[in-house]
Length: 302
Image (cartoon, rainbow, N blue to C red):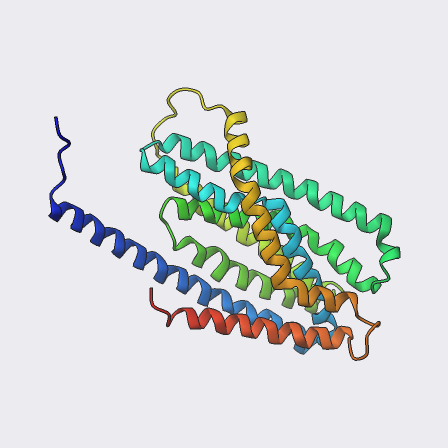
């Protein structure tokens, strides 16, 4: 028997629905990017209240954290989106919920392990790096933001896999921006000036990660009970195998994107004109340029 070809009208209607869904998701993603620009208020306050030197220290520490976070996440943010979307496509909601929980546990465990290794390495060989002491202290301290960053990326990616794009607006766009700014203002008010930006970043990313986790978890409430047994070991192996090359690619991209700030950090006090203050000014300009690129996205064709 020859296969029945679906009517042309059905194919066209499905294509129109998919196109509308893609456009809606792209618009929401642009709104999330624009909302994340409010974090620029935090950068302005750091530069205005504590000076460009402190901003330079924070810029190098944050750029270094971006690299370490790629190792901790291990590409699972992209991997979990694909795995959850596949499960939802075949109606296996219970497996999607299990994958969500597995991915969260993995990235939290990896974040703690990678953070402990990084802190131990700095403690052992930090004096041999000939870097400013305040920079090493800032990087060691800001590693406390690693679990929050990893939790946000995976939880938000799960929401994307469930075709819910708006969660990023609430977690990163609103929660992180407000929590980071308020935490910095409070830290400055109580004269915790030395590591106030790093403390604010830890609080902001932690709040962001928790909100992203709660929003993603709400998507699985009231779902069907799990039928059969899901092999956690097999799912972990599949996730890690799928995410490994993605993680390597993300690490390389992050290294290229952040290499300028990190290299400037290594040349502080060693090259003419390279100081914590100049690095801070450069970091502020770089963040402003990044914000303008996000604004430009709103005018690009979808």
